[in-house]
Image (cartoon, rainbow, N blue to C red; front, side, top):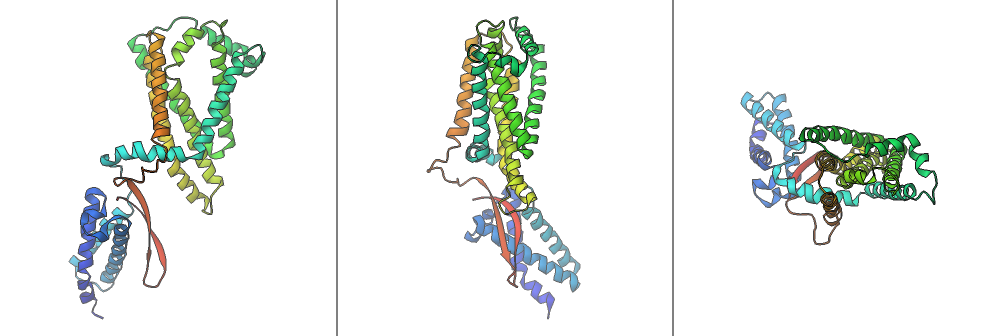
Amino acid sequence: MNVASILDKRRVQWNELETLCDAMESRGRTDRAGGPEHRGAQGIARFSSLYRAACADLALADAYQLPPNTVTYLHQLVARAHNQLYRANQFEPSTWVDVLFYEAPRQIFADSCVRVATILFFGLFTLAMYMGYDEARFPGFANAVMGETQLESLESMYEHKLNGSLDHYVSMAGFYINHNTGIGLTCFASGILIIPCLFKLAYNAVVLGVAFGYMARPDVTGGDNFFQFVTAHGPFELTAIALSVAAGLRLGVGWFRTGGLNRIDSLRASAIQAIPVMAAAAAMFVLAAFTEGFLSPSPLPFIFKAAWAIMSSGMISFYFVILGFPWPQRSRGSHSARYESTTIESDSGDSASVGRVTHAT
């Protein structure tokens, strides 16, 4: 067998693979190389097939000690193709809008863990707020949940009107970003065990609800100042807590409910679903922190803070419900980033998965 002549005939495929590498390195898309066979999943399958063939050619070239320039060329070509095939997903600026305003809200809207966490958190929060407010029907409930000392401390904290300087606002914004991030990460980390996560969710919902209900009583000192402070940042912060728990629950469900996968693969798949949820929670924690540091303690009239709360609630609803709802006319867009897993069959009939490649169709 004349290996040199065989490899020489394969140069057409090498050139094609090189062209595909150029296309993927420039924009991450195989269809930039031209030709219908290079578009979409078909292009990824073609790329994978050429890559495996180039690996086999390199093995032959090494084994039969072909000229060094040919071996070097194949080494470089295989390395380029390998980097594109197994590269980390690239988040290109051209896909930001689609990922943030199409992919993420739709995935969050469809996640059952988000619905469970949201209903449980806001349901317990509303119930606890009512029970904490109505002392006549639920005597001693607020004291039982928070304790008399903590309730007195809460009253004294908001006894005086809010007033702060710009330096105070800046320092408080930094403090609240650190504090809120800690809350989110704690809720997220406990989610993998499910029960501790649900307990933490219920605990925060009940305590916060009781605090709101207690401070809303007409006979409590500092109630007006309390709502002057919490109204503006409340929607962002409360929603962020629920989303953090939902992201953690998604990991926990993936760990215990594998769907036929091994636990590591199931956890990895669940993590991919949890990333948009946690990213949205992080963004809301930051928005809540800046609001809590600058707007909430400011001496602005309550009407401005209430208007901000209403606007932020509308933004949250629009993002997760309107953008997230799977409208029939909004099928997967033509400019969306996608993940494909391609299976290639060898000459012997064996099949093997060659991995995931990001491309846009």
